[in-house]
Image (cartoon, rainbow, N blue to C red):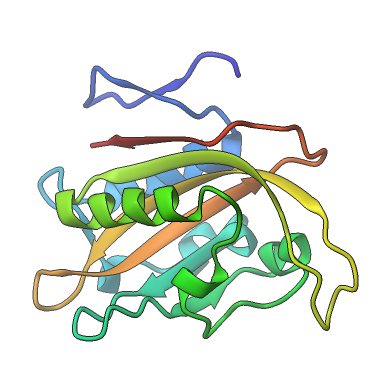
Length: 175
């Protein structure tokens, strides 16, 4: 990776440089309220239509602990080999770092901080794809506020590497 993206408001460098991740971060940062979380109702996928195929959104049901995927971009469907819209994200996450990633996402929601991760996983063979495959990707996720002021949604973008380089699992929270 080259020089990390440095948010003008933060002295902490962000660990990503991919153009789509930087564009996504700039969009979400422009929607934040008082430097905190953006509201779900303030986001429009058409504002980021060029990168929307790499975006997914999940809802957070605090009552039953489910996180159903509301939107799963078309390029992610291609990378994963199936459409995960409607699936609970707890069931959709794969790989040996699954528990660590869910723990990092729980912390993101509780602390209302953005989350960056990088990992290589092996997808599962399913009815749509007869073979498993390696997928290396970076993920950038932001918690979003619902009408009640609680974090009720998460929006995330995934940069899928064209060649699955073996990236060790890493995660970082940032403002």
